[in-house]
Amino acid sequence: MKTFFKGVLRPLWSLLYPNLCVSCQIQLTYSEKFLCFDCMHELPRTLFQYQAGNLLEQRMKGRLPLRYGASMYFFRKEGKVQDVLHAIKYQNNQDLAFFMGEQFGEALRVCGWVDTIDVLIPVPLSENKQKQRGFNQSEWIAKGLGKAMGTPVNTKALIRTRDTSTQTHKNREERFENVKDAFEVIDWSGLKGAHIALVDDVFTTGSTLESCGIAFLKKHNIEISILTLAFAIE
Ligand SMILES: [Zn+2]
Picture 1 (tube, rainbow, N blue to C red):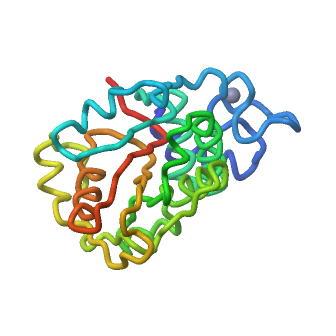
Picture 2 (picture 1 turned 180 degrees about the vertical axis):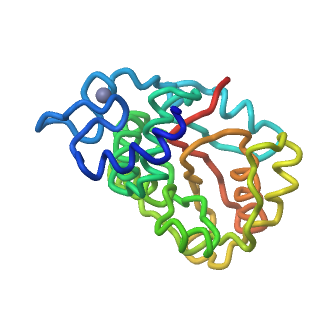
């Protein structure tokens, strides 16, 4: 029932009542945007940006040489962060993706290390998927991040060369096999010696990000960081 609500009823509901909190559905006040004040403050922050060797960086150890890794919120099934991600994905809410990216960027800005990032690179969807969905959520998160951080977003360099079947029921090794070589850098301009940050909505096994990162390691001394809005935990 809950899935039915999230998948079908909620998108209809929000069309009728656009100014409701995307999580608890109460009417928003003038000063609130997308989420009510209470829900916004209940989103569980990771504070990874202050922790060298944080969980994300640990998960990528030995897989991709990473300069920094950070996520804004912990993602748990049925939690508020899932409500936000669902609203972005299934209601095509690119403004919400941008807004959440901005929040993340504001939180990162106080850390000096983010100033070393030259360019933000969202994880691309395949052309088919993007046509189906109409927009790439990672791109809009990156645009919000970029605005808050004053960092450009590059959507031209990295492409997804093939569709990958669903990742949901695969373990980490199977997921990596599935996305290996699925990405290619087709335009290296402005990337020589750059510190890039790959941007995605949620970090689960990290396989997709790993595969994207490997595509950049092939030349030009590129340094890689990872920024994801959410970080999945059990
Ligand atoms: Zn709320």
